[in-house]
Amino acid sequence: MTNRTCHRFIKAGVFALVASAAMSAQAKIHTIRFAVDPTYPPFESKQPDGKLVGFDIDLGNAICHQLQAKCVWKESNFDTMIPALKARKFDGILSDMGITDARLKEINFSIPIYNTPIRLVSHKGKHLEPTAKSLKGLRVGVEQGTIQETYAKAHWQPHGVEVVSYADQSQVESDLVSGRIDALFTDAVQAQVGFLSKPEAKDFALTGKAVSAEGLVGPTAIGLRKGDKKLKAAIDKALVELAKSGKLSQIEKKYFTTNVIVIPQNK
Image 1 (cartoon, one colour):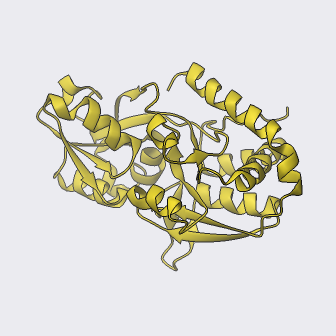
Image 2 (tube, helix red, strand yellow):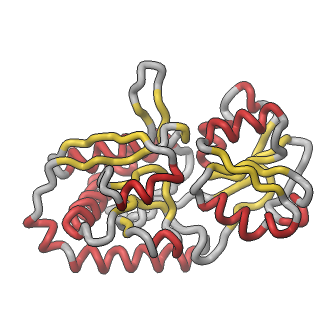
């Protein structure tokens, strides 16, 4: 995604935040039910004892603490999150969901929070590029419902690339290691921290350039129902305050080695 696109999303979010400031001041949020897909470290995963951990979990808990609200976590497959949100099974999607034109037709989003590149992962000796020409005749794994799946099916599948969709990210990684697919297409940070750091991934690496597509690949935010203006105003205000206080930066540094937060912070 280009810087121009990112700035457009941020500018629009700031205007919306200012317009709704009075509403958020009057609104009291008691409980927020966040949906997560716990197969996507370092954003969210589940420990052996069943505890949910990760960047998005810490972020959601910080938002709830800022609002003096209770956080309730709902596990969900990524590709079912938008229909389930619209069906009111939870209140927000906090699961590394990027803002796209297609999703904006279905749901609303908080102000943009962070931006990470999208990359291919394959065997170190293959030197693949994220293009239809380079991937023709190969099998590329993606998680269902992701922008990676949308991009791969739109740009690569019509040109001879077999796009294989999986219910969760752990299945994509397992099939890459076993050789059932030739590459996986995912968030670069997720790949580096959540997969390539594992012993079984020692023969694999990020390959080629990052992918960008106007309107298809955007910054990450919290998915919200259209019409939930009270909740959006409260979450937007909390995010800005967390950025100003430095709490958001602390969470970022806990999980990432590069700066990904796009909310302006006080120097």
